[in-house]
Image (cartoon, rainbow, N blue to C red; front, side, top):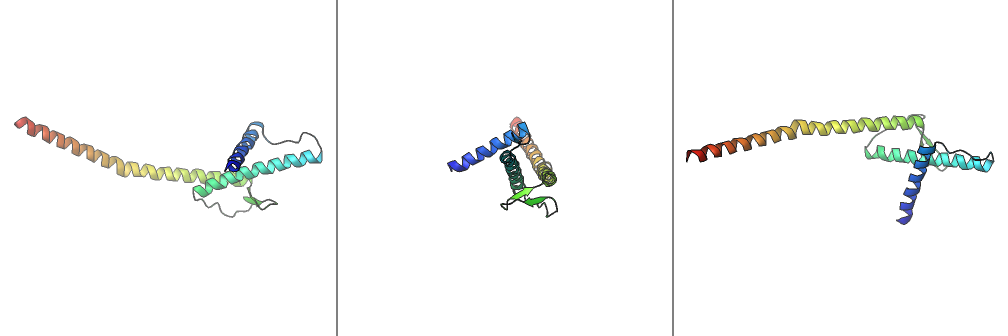
Length: 136
């Protein structure tokens, strides 16, 4: 459990660094530094891809098997290309908009008219009781 929490925290630190400072650059021109920078880039792509894929699965989105959208790295992990990320984000936004419209439809077509009818009935009963009490 603790290891999983630390792993998630470490991934958030990587994302924060990537967002604030941009791409990871090699400090020296040594092959070791270039490899370290490339590994960091691949790790960042993997983290972002996993986050997007999880969100797409949450919304039950089929992004298709289009060419240039999904790649597999050397370890067999799923990496989404930048073009694929844009496509998946667009599909997620469309699904969010569709779900919001469905919720709005329920509110405007069912809940508000029922609420108005109940308030009307309550007002009519209150008026009837007031008239009947006044006659006595």
